[in-house]
Length: 377
Image (cartoon, rainbow, N blue to C red):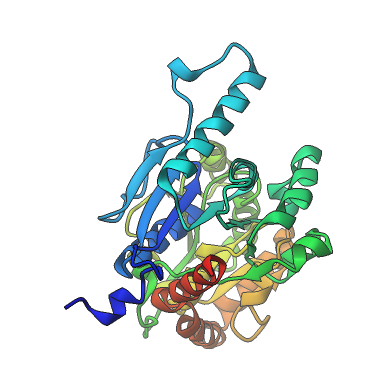
């Protein structure tokens, strides 16, 4: 006899529930990790999961066992002579995937993918949930994308956002379909806070680009360097600005105290004992790295970046510190506060760790599944 709990994960006709997850690739980023974790959870709940990506990235998250993968990018043989022709070829191919896979629901992640999912699923009677992963005005920065999102999102079964503040970008027709869902925490970060004397290290994690503004973090650290010579700064990650940031550390005379080791696979282990975690972004939806650090009990400092995610996580002075974006002086002052008063930093870290009960992977993934099941009904 079949497990009754498994049968509940079936449709009324007895067929397994089918979902298609759509994203550009599975390269190692926050949104990609959320989708892979969700795929693993749904598969474990008896769903049939198909991962639809445009291409294969150089370094990617491995797919969970049981998840099929389909590529939606047109091949060389399918290419047309014009950009317009290629655009319509991509539309036809993606629509063909939906027809062939026959999902009960489509979940799309990020920017143009959301537009494509809605365009290609028209009149197929398949509910589509689109997920905006960052600050909407950044994710839909161009006029054409902004117009299309505000029109097409009104046809979505659900518009999944990262924060309440993100709703303000959209018209009422879209806001009434908006759902704010948490990000499931990476299981590597589910652990008790470190108890003891923390290392005299400031850590940051993230892609090295202009938006993440690691330059501001380095300049803020430089302002504290003479007063607190025992501290060092480590920034994990890679990106187009990494070489420039290494050069900046040299120019400031701090190359012996500022380390940029690149991407690593054991981030949680490396930062668990750190004195503090910092985020310098201008714009974020719900910053995964900040959430992970807080759930592990690290004292955190973050910019109050547009998108609202950091402000929803941090109660300034209670479980972390919020500073204005781009303000190196304010970031430096918050660093000095934690360094000078480690007991205050520890109290903020312990308060931050309380977030873990709400962001445990199984709890949040179940919320996503409940939302998706509701769309199927």
